[in-house]
Length: 215
Image 1: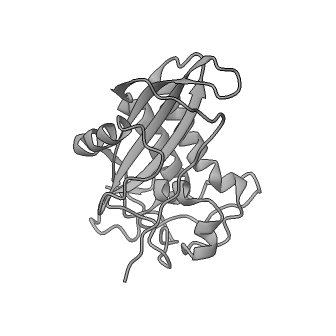
Image 2: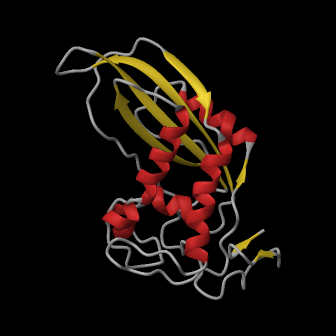
């Protein structure tokens, strides 16, 4: 039996009131480029954590594509002001929350979310390419979903909500970023990706040699 797991990541202040929301799609080109870059670094054996752990090259990591259906599902869920995962069947999901007095450009929060998720690999000791209970429990679930080799479609959205800061009582904006992935990853006791020569185990037998990603 395959068991897929996911984790939430919360940051900054606690909010006590919700009064409304505005939702918009993240500009997908900039966001998708970040994901492709990280996956390419891993595929080519160039991904190094801040603990100076260099990961082995990946032989079966697929190139990400933007999926409008996943974007719509992420947008619908983001509009609900979620506090936990949706548990939609067969869909991987990453969540990110941020609070700000000046929310600014939606694109910035897409990059902030993606950077926060991949930073889990820098915060934790990534000592196994198998997603064990211990590895997942260390808090790398967002990062492993981002680089899960078999996942190749993604859609994301961001929603904002007007809130009140618990301590100061001042108005503040809550930003929620949601990304949906297909096929989902994070299956316990399975490899995050297969080690080996880039593209040597692509099911499609097609490869982008520059990025080392299967297409």
